[in-house]
Image (tube, rainbow, N blue to C red; front, side, top):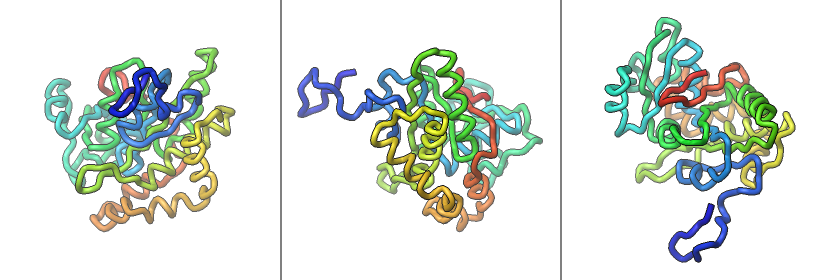
Length: 257
């Protein structure tokens, strides 16, 4: 991939692509696109709450279709799916809104972060996986299995979704840093440890604070916002580590496991 924004010379290699590394890390959609060259899978991490919601919903037999908020209604109509409601309604962005009684439902879940990133990256040559603290080890084991099947290095871009400031810019969210770091740490445990400096730093953030991660995620600004709004159960679900064996892969507009 060649990089030529304003002020740069055509033909100069992109210094931001982390292309020499097997495991890469970035923030948001722009960051994801900067590290896509030659990767096999993009792992989207949005702990509070999209990635956690996908995991919980799929565990109850619900199919999730990701969308940016502005595209959600049209996607639901095109696929005969239900449009997720606001948090506090049945079937929403809240992971606690899904239960066994919803098995078989098809739901379009929209958010400006993890869901929008997943939708934007879906449908191309690169696979898209939704990951959180809940399924981070399962995702790492899936990557290892794919690498063995490929019989070659399987390249991974881990993307932390982050949140949004009122002006629309990306807010670095500590829960997504820990979530991404947890996946990178699990990959390293399995021997997939050729990490970029950015990925190494994210992995170290989780490894160094692992015993406190549940508390730190629950005490984060994003979590406090949810708790204050009455959604403590969503925070509890999101802070659980290695409780799921599901690996949600985006196929034909839908996450399936």
